[in-house]
Length: 146
Length: 219
Image (cartoon, rainbow over all chains, first blue to last red; front, side, top):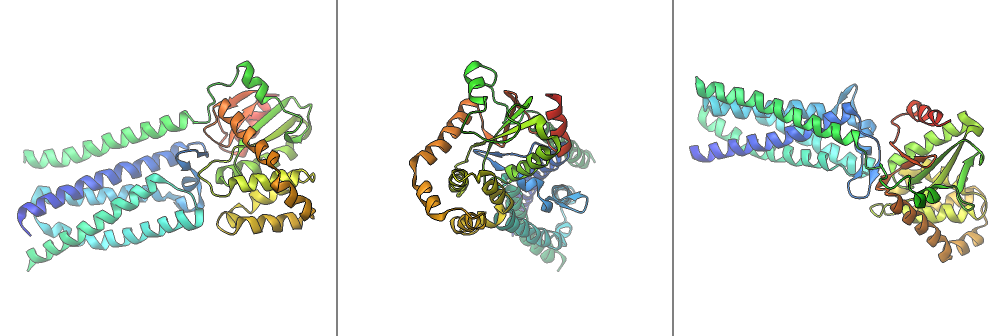
């Protein structure tokens, strides 16, 4: 893996994390500001955000997403700062559980709550992409430490 | 040093900006629900919102507060409001009249079928029984064999099944549902449930307490 390809990969990582961050912040904001529960002709239902699965205890799932994407952004910016792939070494330990958690949420959305939430799907997509990139970046970190 | 400052400073400022924008967007969305029916208030719409002879009503026809609701049987939000209507109808008794109108969204697979079963049950004076069964068990039939579950409901409330089958085939039944849907469109309904109180489009209340307060404010 050339230095350039790592650079572009980190940039992609940061951009995807920003998209995920914006998405998760929006969902968190909607949770706290409280939209009106409805189903619309085009967008489906708010029911996902209202369901019992939208929170774990008092913590909205979306807020966990905000923390996850913030962590990812810190890792990306840390690399841009010190240019040492070591910052990515432990990344999959976060991205893999996040991916499976996301998968569980998508399963709930389609098969249990049975309502579509576009913002939740976007988040599942960004989490998946971040996990894939984290494997490459982890490999790079490993190579650097050898 | 300046690069480091720019990177981390950029991250903090960027995240703060994104947070601000997203909160603004979410706030705008909650402040301007799509339920707001732009056309409510003019004479054509006033006519549509008058309770009709063939409407499904619950409560006192002479009540001072009339809640007309456009609703979809498969919409989870509508289930939530159906249970609130029940509670408030009990609590407020003769002070309020609830009117149910069909607004089956096309993105739900079984909405129209559910409406037809409710209408057919209505012909045997069991609209509200069927309405309640359909909403209470929404999660079950939404992902199951809806039609056979509706038939079980019909059986459980002892409907005449031959009559039911005959009514289900009646095109007038579908026309009636379609007429509600078209009225809803005329009123500017874009989402369900959409509520109109005494002829005015209202923002959906977010809780039972808000809903009760809203109704009481029209008394």
